Image (tube, rainbow, N blue to C red):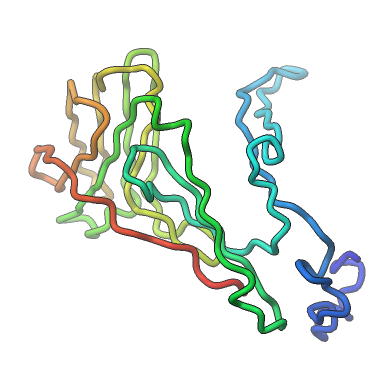
Length: 216
């Protein structure tokens, strides 16, 4: 049943009852999807990103009513794992609908770099900072955001996947204050901590734990 097509009933809360929701989801038995980025194809002169759903192949097509998500390197191996929380609705069966953690066992086979930024003149969390990384033929960009997901908060640490590149040629940080700092010839497979204005890279600390929030 479409909530849009039955908006008046939706607003009454009727569709959130067990009678309409079923055991797992009030609007069907949808499963989670996991999209693989297959790159860009050119169609009619336009660059179009292409994705394919690999959830079933990787075992992440869970039928729970997923609501909160968080990405974090839970096992400290350099790649991002996925934590998903579920909405029990009005069933009261919270203990029967636990959160799920999907461990990434692919990224750990490739090189990476993680970055913690600490603002001084800028805000301490460096929200709004831009990071440009160049490693061989790779040119990657990240933007530090203040929020990350519905019903969940992901790590503020910035991760770069480097594939087989064994060194970072350059790393440029543009702080919200307007200050631009550039670092060269950085080692890979570890985390670094950069404080605004110190022009210095130091080893990063262990990643703080984060988790998805409760379902709505």
